[in-house]
Length: 487
Image (cartoon, rainbow, N blue to C red):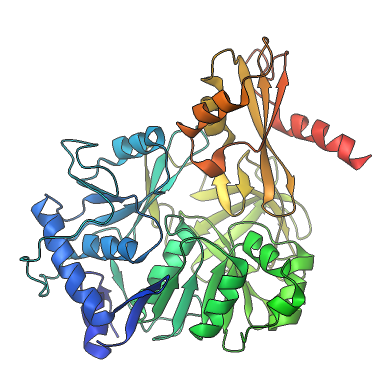
């Protein structure tokens, strides 16, 4: 089968399976035929509001059928979905809208970004609009995801893949006309990519508002799910269920459980391999930018324990020393990636500049080593980015919010170990007059940061946490707070 424009992908599957369920969310569902008609009408409403080919449409909707409808209507209008968290504080969303300059914002109060048109959650297009197919139109980019960025200012990562898909091309172990479960937030790149790939392949996509360990197992059984997307935090919570609860559900139809977005402890991975079988467990390492990735199945992992896999066929990787030299197998260095199609072929930034070394090699900020067979093993993060439950958090962004509180001279945010989330945010705050009122600080941060970026613990000091050059030694601060725990 050839590439199908995403403006026509629902029409394609509607012709094949009009009465089959396309989307499921908390008891609500839509067939392919219903999805086609509804998104045709919605796309016409978007066009009437001024959405044109290759525009961005910012989508601030929670997980649910409405999120998918907004993305599909955007593609049918020839534009590019630009998802953000529905719980994003206005301060942060304002910056994203400023950077992206969308022609429509969905999921906010009408008039919030005037003169940009805005539609609130729950919007229903005029019933008089036709629900017949629109002319085919394919946006130059199929997604524009958001990243906080190391500077604390948001940037858009705009894919250079056009809004088209070939359902026959094997991808992510997702079968055609199967069933996918997505318990993660759709505004993140991983859940978005897995959910949309499954939809393009004619699958039924089951999505939850938020993750619940036992409900996830129940849905896998109830819908005979083929593929599920997870992060290690979800796996930890499932494993923490009483054994009689965890083994109550029939998961025998599950063909692939993907985990990514954060390191998975080897003990946890081994538990899942023993439980579900090594052929079911899959891991992917890569970035939203899409320069390249590694994948590994549980069967391979048992022979290369701790590895995140070998580079996929579309990219190459190398491990580099401090002088830029390629390091031999077994030696730790910085991991660099390059797409075989060439540097800059997979994405471009809006709001930032790509950082690369000679030859178009780029780093995701990870340290690691390769074995003699080319399997990659990650050891640490070179950058200051902190992974909390699979979400990327840049300290600079959180510190900027803390520093805006009255009396704060400077601050540093570090990640401390957490059994559930992998890491928890800890704030070290230089405030000579002493600790802030907790409720006042909570209210201050709630205006500036989405909830998962708010530190879980606060420590107040009366000496600067930055040197005269404005640099903060987060690694030293972290080690000093981990040392007492080790004794």
